Every structure is written in C-alpha cells, then in structure tokens.
Image (cartoon, rainbow, N blue to C red; front, side, top):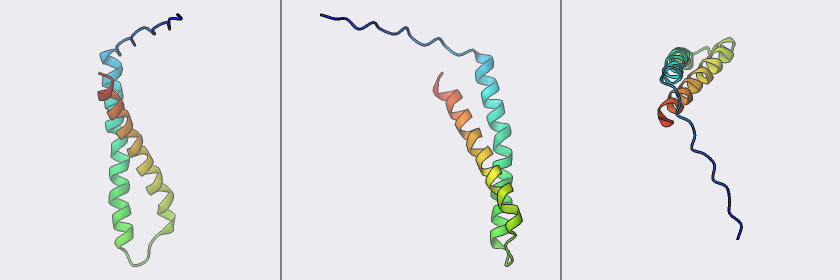
Length: 77
C-alpha cells in the first residue's frame, strides 16, 4: 500500500496583507467607477468620441482588478 503524503495546511495570511489588499482594491475601484460614468456619458452622446475608448477600457480593467483583489482578500480569511 502506498500512502500519499498530505500537504501541510496553508499558513494564514497576515492581517496587514489582507488590509492592504482591500485598500488597493478600493483604490482600483475608483477608475472603474469613472470609466462607467464617462462610458455611459459617451454612449449617450450623438457623436461618440472614439478617443476615449482606451481610457474607458483601462478604467474598467482597473475596476475589475480591484474587485478581484477585494474578493481574494475576503475569501482566504
């Protein structure tokens, strides 16, 4: 019979790192909020400014990364 070695339980994350992840996640939500605001305003205009699209996409990606960081901070507790 072969026994499989069990992996040790993961070490708990420090509270400081969790707090930092939450803080950075909240800061990254701000560009996402601005991107939603400006994207909605740009879509409602008759003449859509295509120059804003890269900034809107970058803001939405930053907001998504913020959500992922906050979720990861709360999930591993």
